[in-house]
Amino acid sequence: MKPKTKKRLKKILFITCASIIVLIVLLHFFLGHIVKAAVETMVPRITGTPVKMESFSFSIFSGKARMRNFIIGNPEGYKTEYAFKLVELLVEVNMDTIFSKKLEIDEIKVNGVHVVYEAGIASSNIGDINANVSKFAGAGKAKEKAEKPAKEAKGEGRKIQVNDFYFNGAQLSLSAVLLQGVTTTIPINDIHLQGIGKNDEGVLIGDAADQIFGAVYREIGEASSGTKALKGFF
Image 1 (spheres, rainbow, N blue to C red):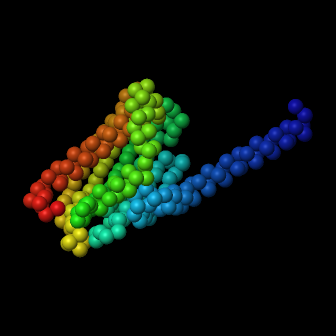
Image 2 (tube, helix red, strand yellow):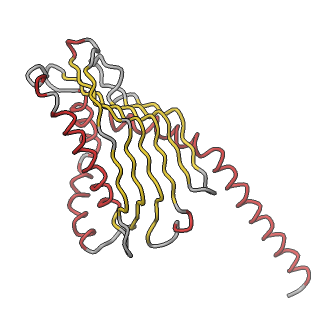
Image 3 (tube, helix red, strand yellow):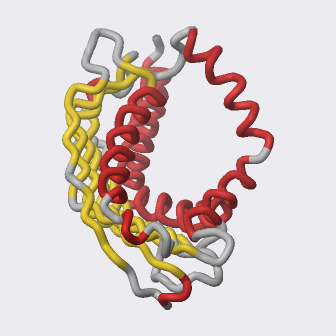
């Protein structure tokens, strides 16, 4: 290789490496702002409600992501402050597995979830949000359901392992429009799941979600069962 060619090649490699480093630094410092803007712009189109997120951060060096104060507001006509609030979400990914067949998530912490169920005359805030989400999904949802079993039967999709999942400090509040925002609040038991997908292959993301949400729904069910005296009112 000619010296002149070597010099050009070194220059190209230097520029390429420098560009990659600059991109990594920019992502490290500005990714949170990009995600925040995207969430606050896109999610309201799905829920049909105001959505706010205080902050989001992710370190590509440590694999740690953090989201604070994610709030889904209410549809028009409801009196409570919001329908859903998440104080903090922490996720720690093992970056050594980012390109492997099985992505290893060391820890997921869900802190301070607050669900507010407000009964209206014909529906509820949660029911209306669910209807908005279903409307947004449209025909694509049916197509996804039709394709999902075939894909999962073949074991297609990224496999993951979640070493620890924590769900702490959650609350469920009940209200009605006639109460003008007054609520009855019930604590939800803390949850700690371990070793989700802890085998050679791991589990599909959907299967991991089923295990996690199944445990959360059970605890919410237990909490709400203690409000049977209010059933006739709501």
